[in-house]
Amino acid sequence: MGTIVQKFGGTSVADAAKIRLAAERIVRAKREGNSIIAVVSARGDLTDELVALSHEVSAAPPRREMDMLLSTGEQQSVALMAMAVDALGEEAISFSGAQIGIVTDSFHTKAKIKNIDPTRIIEALDAGKIAIVAGFQGVDENFNVTTLGRGGSDTTAVAIAGVLKADVCEIYTDVGGVYTADPRLVPDARKIERLSYDEMLELASLGARVMQARSIEFANKYNVAIHVRPSYSDSEGTYIVREVPEMEGIVVSGAAVSEAEAKITLRAVPDRPGVAAAVLGGFAARKINVDMIIQNISASGFADMSLTVPMSDLAEAREVAVALTEDLDAGRVEVDDNIAKLSVVGIGMRSHTGVAEKMFSVLAAEGINIQMISTSEIKISVVIDQASAQRALRAIHRAFELEKAPA
Ligand code: ASP
Ligand code: MG
Image (cartoon, rainbow, N blue to C red; front, side, top):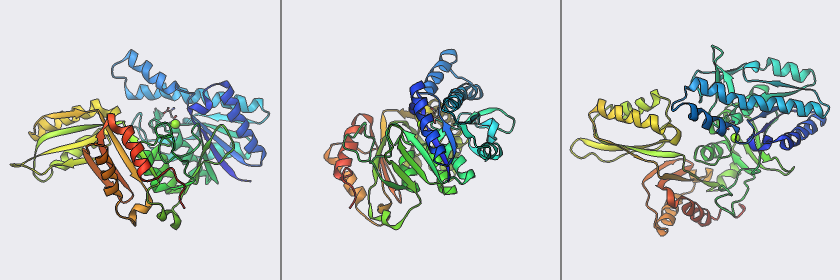
């Protein structure tokens, strides 16, 4: 008898039939003797539709109202799921984020969880009920509804699994696991059996559209075992767990490509102490996540600085960049939104050399120019032209033989 969090994404609750299927899975796990907390996302593409609708009524929808709107998607899902479970003869109770005390900061549309009060969930479970919780949403200290950023239901699920010390957090998806590359882009991509938190965090941040990166930070911090598994069958998916020594043997675990970023270049930035801090500080003040940064060697006291930002923040980032160049007496701002970031990830890179060389040689052989490079202990990312991204991903996947199961 254990405690299991089951998270169902938008595709897994897209219509009545899918909701009933998910409800059957929830009920089955409950009847096996487990306490079940189900975390659900908005149905299908509902969140995208609501975002589109908001832009039809306003060019710049206030973020607070955006959260009020988007949170309705998950609220529909919890009620429908509780009804479906009830219809199968088990007691269920749905909760909004506010009702179970998911308290966040006040950064609307990308709020961070500060605290969860598990009292109501525990009461429900103790009464033999299945708790159905709305993903992606919380409230700030003044009871304003907030949301956790796109894909935030994963973070809700993992955070709840963390506070309840659940045995496992199951993430049900229509792709069935984490692959060596997106199977829609690389047909012979292979499902990975087991990944470390660090690898998954890199892959999630680098464009593998499987889980919200922030959820993996929570999992790592609170030691939550995650099982990403198919919603259409009972087969195993991918376990995301704490690192074990055997994992070092796999040099490259996966590759990912992201087209969700744009490159901003600030020309002729004065080359003196404090300038980089001022630039980054300008973006940080607006909560814009800067990813890659390069600065060229200065010529006559000026340097060019390029950085990448999420496409969704591009308009705001451009404003920040223009304001910065005025403050710093720098040159012009250039924006390139036709870039892609291609990355390879693997814990084994810590102890094996030659990965970067191989990656760059493959790109050279394909005639693809590298615009930016960044590395960490366990990943190498390059920015390339977007038009070449899928071809590059396939070439890299082939070169590292990712389709073959590790020995
Ligand atoms: N419905 C939200 C989204 O589409 C949250 C989620 O699905 O995790 O981003
Ligand atoms: Mg999702």
